[in-house]
Image 1 (cartoon, protein in one colour):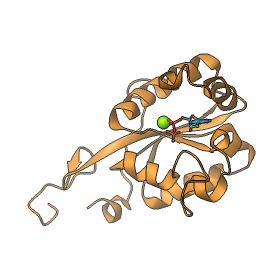
Image 2 (cartoon, helix red, strand yellow):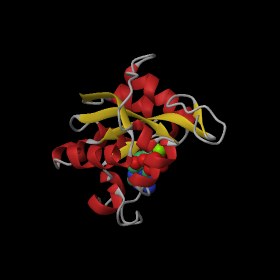
Image 3 (cartoon, rainbow, N blue to C red):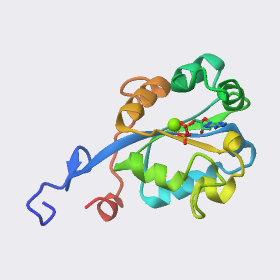
Length: 167
Ligand code: DAT
Ligand code: MG
């Protein structure tokens, strides 16, 4: 129990905060600029848990499925070329309100508008080289995790520190 009469749980619901999963991609510029450790470190230190991780070059077919909502926009072809221009580090992160926690750590889409202290604000200059992708809703998170890792491909485990992060 967490002192408020609720069962403490690191999966499912805890104190009205949902434990969510989000898909994060360190894009090819992040890999080429040797920022993988820095980016994962920031997210890990915030308290997020890595539950799937891999390195892969995203081909046009996978990029088309991932970025389907942007098809027809003027930047679409450049986006597909950029995301496939080298290997990306692709991961699933889990934690309380993980979608919002990661999006706020990542910063606004255009790095110039992203606040200092955010990943894009600290390391990026242009929207077409914004280093990182993060799911923008629970629904898109589920879709993107399934797209990149398939169903039931995340690893469920406890960390000793979890009780110091999740009340
Ligand atoms: P986000 O990645 O912050 O979720 P999004 O989903 O609106 O942003 O767009 C997906 C990616 O497409 C974004 O990370 C970079 C690129 N993009 C978006 N808007 C763009 C624009 N106006 N010009 C160039 N690239 C753009
Ligand atoms: Mg998006």
